[in-house]
Image 1 (tube, rainbow, N blue to C red):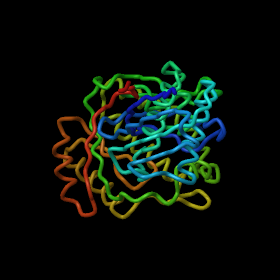
Image 2: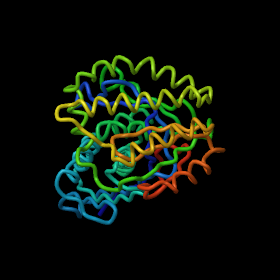
Image 3: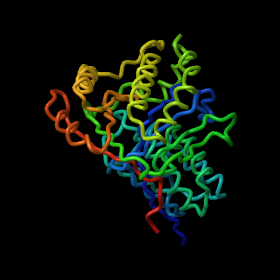
Length: 326
């Protein structure tokens, strides 16, 4: 009786230049290209076991058996892998996250990157990094950015075959830190998939998409030159741009909490005092503060004294998705 099993780990990522909205929902093709950094402290560890002993797919996330839409999303991804490998066996998926899920910390990015690698390897597939990034994209768009290591760019491309992420610099390129202020651990009421679908209803959506290419090029150059004074304002502008689309969608989406807005003002004050730190948000209320390694301790110290900050997580640049067993 055969059993096919593999375990993989992948990092979440923080997008410096973000994508919001899709030009093809079925293929998960983004409205624009994006730029991100893998986060070494935010990881998903996933084991996939295919076996004829299973009558149905079993999905266990953080110790709890998943049902409904969450399970179906994973089963659909397993079906993609089974089709590629010519495999019919059902699977058991066990996945554990090192951080809060569904709170805007890119849990689907690390989750589907790890799932794609573990499932494909368990099924006997040896995919290239490009092929794995494309596969992960089908599960969650931002997951394609968690496949390469360090700092990555997801090129929107023209079709499914050329829409994938590549590394633009390894983790050791720049000792940046993402000091994450957790202001809520709750699942967000509007998921990213639903939010992407609403993006075209905003009158600001097309203007944002049109502006991204120039901003991404400038941010990429600043990242390669390790120029935070140039990169920082660009990532703040891009975050505001994305959330402006969310807030003007129909119906509008408001991810920020009062503590999120308080932190925006705090960071602006700290910068006026000479502390080089910049903020960004994904689709959630938690605030990512980007600084260099030498300023990490001071940013962390200040955050811990602010009302509404429940936890502080510090991440540096992380590696790409990787198999750890067998």
